[in-house]
Amino acid sequence: MTSALSREDLERELRAIGERQYHDLHPFHKLLHGGKLKRGQVQAWALNRFYYQVCIPKKDLALMARMDDPALRRIWIQRVLDHDGFGESREREEGKVGGIERWLRLTDGLGLDRDYVTSLRGILPATRYAVDSYVNFVSSKSTLEAVASSLTELFAPAIHRERIAGFEAYYAFANDATLSYFRKRLDEAPRDVEFGLEYVLDNARTPEQQQQVIAALRHKAELLWAQLDALHHAYVSPGLIPPGAFVPDDMEPPVYRR
Ligand SMILES: O=C(O)c1cc(C(=O)O)c2c(n1)C(=O)C(=O)c1cc(C(=O)O)[nH]c1-2
Image (tube, rainbow, N blue to C red; front, side, top):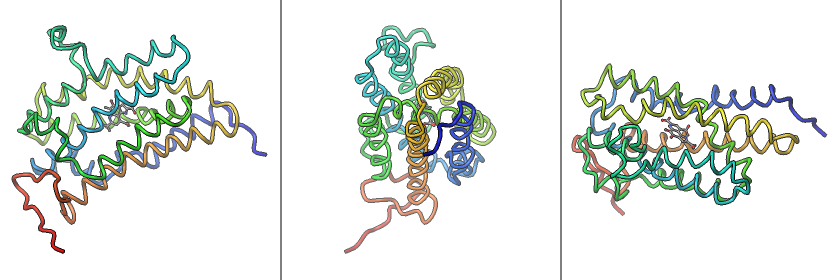
């Protein structure tokens, strides 16, 4: 029987997943952050990613519904508020504006219609599958595996910094409103992930639990990667937009024939 990893070795294994397979390495992100995408391609990314944004609080609530400890729920609920905000009447204070509204400021700045974005009609089939698989994973696995799956956020501040710098350098749509989502996450994510990492290291004690948390983080990294594969296929190369998905003004919709 294999013996359990030390705390340090488990943390090293988890961080190695980010080094090896986090979606900052994906060619689509390289193009996005390097200023190589046309407006319509950036619109497609933001529109698809909106589905991830709206599902994050849903997966956190699914996880909270199964948490037995009120103290844990009190900590976790902050993540839901970060994304949902405090409602229009209390959002005069800029700090109370949630991530979903901030993301819509990005899609506004990119010239997308809010009703179209929030209808989710234009997203890719693979976006829906990948994001739904995250919500299903968190809903059906143990609390420990669900918390572990959020640990891709260990690697998110670096990609948010890269994105802010790339957008500022290369794209005319970059301004305080369109960048506000990413700037806010730079404060929120480190706090979340510090707690999540401690929780996982404290609770993944047996070799079996440790393998489960490693597998959970890999699964999460894969579903992030799969979303970008689908975007790349549809909007970069070969540029085959699936039927019904968003067609930017600067791209031709492909014709599918029987
Ligand atoms: O832009 C990104 O690359 C990125 C990645 C991730 C991630 O790694 O899951 C998150 C976010 N952003 C993010 O903004 C966010 O709020 C977030 C929450 C979670 C989560 O799993 O609970 N991941 C992420």
